[in-house]
Length: 368
Image (cartoon, rainbow, N blue to C red; front, side, top):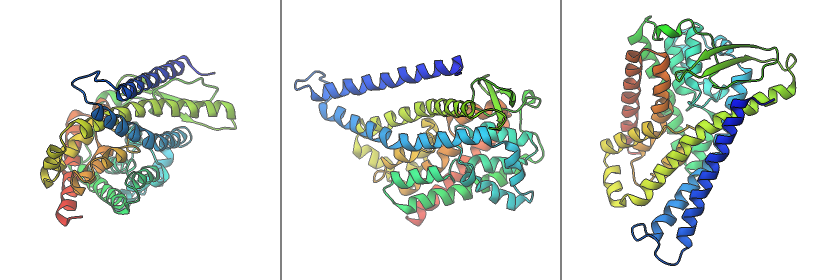
């Protein structure tokens, strides 16, 4: 039986989608109107905005759905203990292994912070956990496939994103490990918390092991040690559907906001002004990195937003957008600040920003 919080979420999703449909319907009606209903907003602008907005949404949704489904499977069937056993104990071998975990565990950055926190609580070294958190949302088959599709088969963008993202994650993990040392980065009030999965919702439990914790927003979370033999196929399927629907709802909000802002910028901001900013190697990189942080897009969908800036911004700035966004943004910063000491969060975000900026500038200087 589906729990009441899930039903409330489903209702919110339906209302949210209906709202989007009403907006699209209104825009199309204005476009088709032969007169001049709005003297300020021109018909061509509305038509262009609608086309850009819908194209981003329709192209990104399939990859977001695949990513949230895979993430839900991992949340339910794979424990952090399993991940901790796979990662080697040697420092540098461990950094490389952690950076490649995304190939096996393709988790979106929307769910990676709680996993990283639990890995640290299980005794995984900080530099390994940080590298894992930063690399998994980039070195991820779904993310790389969506990037390839978004950039129409331009393999060099996929390579730059995957390789530079991996190198950046290793470098950041190594640096933060040296700076932090053995100092515990977790807040004192999180030391005795139980382990959770980060799904942020309640389940109908049927005699299976689970633990509870609270995330940075105070929402109760659960971790599952699932055995289909102990529980039942139907109950397991319900859990998968619940996880997938909730993650899709959370991720979808940021995707739609990102698509809206991108379409708004592409349509209403003067192209000559965008080009003047975008062609400067330093300024274009800073602008795109700030945009990645503010938009807080899911890594399975951000490539479709980044593609809209091709030809207007430098390649390095677009790469900076693609590698910084999955590593840190507004929502992840809030999640980190809820579980980790603020001094550690500030150091981590600063190092991430500097390393990603350097990587983006290298691409600009080489002239790719």
